[in-house]
Length: 152
Image (cartoon, rainbow, N blue to C red; front, side, top):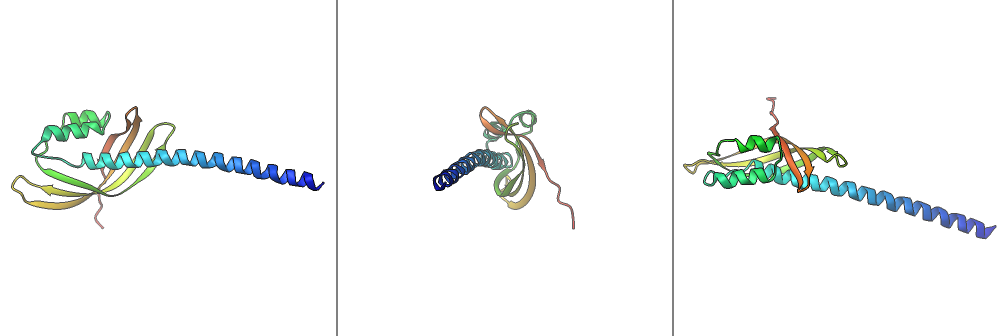
């Protein structure tokens, strides 16, 4: 009787341990997808909100490297930047993630340092949303939009 109880407890521990391990592996896969999309989104926002007026071809190449259609098509036809902009993502979060479908949405706050041709500079902050799509080359930005800041 005592041996039966010991085996029952051992079997229960084994089953619960197996379920816990399976759940932990599933959570890890989800967390990896979330972390990958967030990191790629932060990179895309930094690249897409930065520009080098002295080298517009390199700027455009960087923009195109982190995008896919339809954003890629719009940027391919965009005029050359007339300002140098250094962007830093101050904060970002995924608002949606469909890991199985390969889509995500992110919101970010970007600090911009704008430098005019005459050397004068200023800073600005913008909120942007980014739609991401997973491709064979990783997560790419499919859309980028500025979030309007309403007057309070």
